[in-house]
Length: 260
Image (cartoon, rainbow, N blue to C red; front, side, top):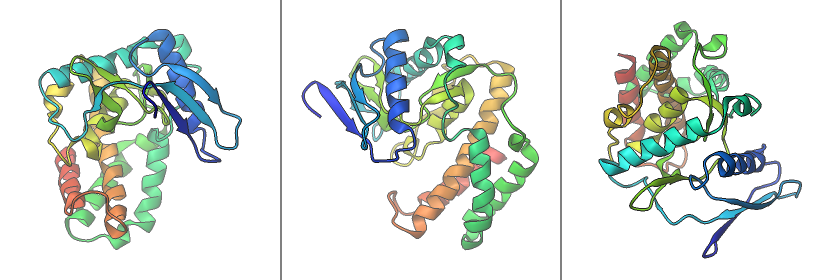
């Protein structure tokens, strides 16, 4: 980082992350200027792709008490993001990584490889979650009648910067075509939204007017993503944990609460 720009370098065989980053910055510069960094230059064909963008002034919301004006500003930022890119443009954008079908596939694999190593309340939450997943119908394909939007694909509050007046958004490596309910669930269920400071989910979600179909979609997406995080945190706990002790047990409780 310099005083006014960020040079983001990607590893070889980055799985399309640099391309998604550049596409997102370009789209938002056109349809929602000021919401995200301005794209300046890119070399996507390099062995180690590079994307250069302007540097924003805000501080990450993660690790802070997100309440009051910050919750309203966060909701305003993501609403702008979801509504900015026209539907005829969104339909041409590739589906984001970590979409519903991909996550269901991962969970089915983890049920065989990771579940047998778990025990206690974590195993109970895994079993309850996998039983729900098997009857949920989420493995059948795309979501129901909910409109597609452009989504950032990462709910980490570290990607939302507060400058004292507004929230801006960074990090679009996992961006793509999605839907509003799934993206809202990305924020509410990300471990970064609760492991350090409790995030007022109800106050955040009441900022949005969801259709009946989106309301159902949000509930199912929250359950799905919470279950994914349970397996991720269980794997982390067995290796090199990045979160405080007891995080996976807390996540087990969150999963059971959402499934109740």
